[in-house]
Length: 164
Image (tube, rainbow, N blue to C red; front, side, top):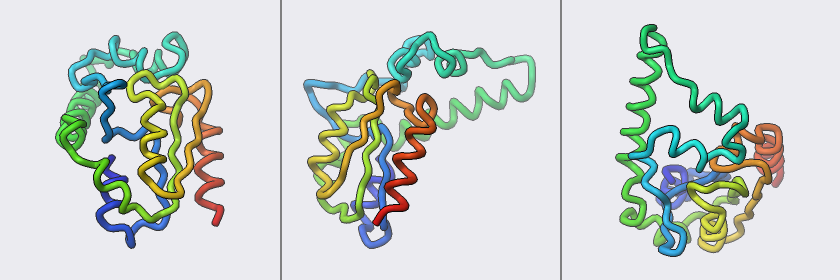
């Protein structure tokens, strides 16, 4: 959402734009759950294609609260979530949809087909609003295709950025 906002506000400053599972739009028929209040056990099945796979296991791994590293990890995660919440929640009230038409940069929209947090109908919404954009939907990935399908995500982004 922040990248799209920058590209819409300062179109001459952005030569190419890649959005990966972006938030920032709202559809009443496909509401985005309030992930800010979810436990990891509630959130992880929504953001990974395989809730029993290695990415889910990593995300659900409990930090060692006895160690300084574990405590730091919890603090960093909490801080990151709070900062994200400041910018993106509540999603319906930010007005990004009204500004997306200002984006002039070639845009690639990458989405995981199995995303249950922000479903792939939002990829279509971004594509409709951003002239000339294209969507790459990856099978075997959900909200974090860069973690679940890193090679395919990297290939799509590299090809897009390297192309004209």
